[in-house]
Length: 332
Ligand SMILES: NC(=O)c1ccc[n+]([C@@H]2O[C@H](COP(=O)([O-])OP(=O)(O)OC[C@H]3O[C@@H](n4cnc5c(N)ncnc54)[C@H](O)[C@@H]3O)[C@@H](O)[C@H]2O)c1
Image 1 (cartoon, rainbow, N blue to C red):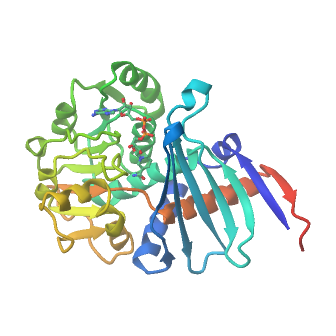
Image 2: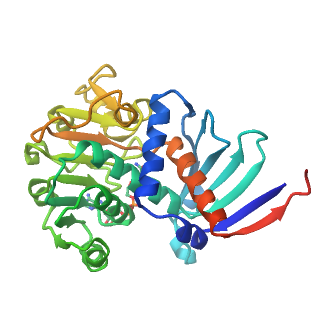
Image 3: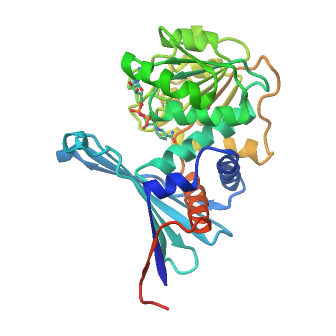
């Protein structure tokens, strides 16, 4: 019995935000709706002495030979040691024996890819069929992966980007124009992005809601993916009230974190509100956007089933390309 070890560099050679990753993540959301996925709640471990935390996410999927357990970490003092702040990894387990098949030392690269691909799946079903302008608020890692994902499903012509850090915004423009092949306009503020765009992704770790209801317009799609902890929030909860179609990755999760959580605590939403899970749309059980005037909104908090899907695909591609080293466990 052998365990394959893959480094971030090898995983970057194996997988990216492309049609294949998008198809894998789309299928993963359908598994949720079809009741095939067993997905426990997120386990959260605080390490206050070192300003660190670890989130453990996983899902077993009926019929798959393997599944992943992800240890996603944020250690925010690591920069003092010259280290990245997200020493994350995924372990792929055999569904038959429970033994490890692979350790993917991805440093959150696979999370970035599966999240960018999830944004693409959302846009495929919820953004207008033809869009001119995309928008992104938060020009960090996800600001990049989300727009790479959006480009797979919508051929937008220009991108409005905003970040509170002007240097990061300038760097984003320089780096992403050649990657996306579109003009990137450094917006003066978040309001300009929302007012001028057909499809917007919010990708900041903001703890203060900044996106205002008065900026919304007919036909707009918003993917809010920055808030993945109970105290993170990007949207004024009134924005939730204005959405004609309100979607999320997993209700149970979004009700305790993400934007829907703030909708509940302010009384704008209840657990019985008309909210569609993304998997209901990808599996054909519920419609996505139905006309060009609807305002659509999706709250993504990130699910373990996405981690299993991306880990299995990445491992498969790495094996195909002969990447990684194998350790023999000395078992039959
Ligand atoms: N939903 C999911 O599945 C999922 C997956 C990965 C990351 N996340 C979350 O997405 C968020 C972004 O992650 P990242 O890896 O891109 O982080 P990052 O640090 O690389 O980028 C965040 C950017 O947002 C900017 N910013 C902060 N507050 C802002 C504000 N109010 N307005 C405009 N810009 C602002 C920062 O300057 C930075 O450039 C985090 O909260 C992260 O936890 C969610």
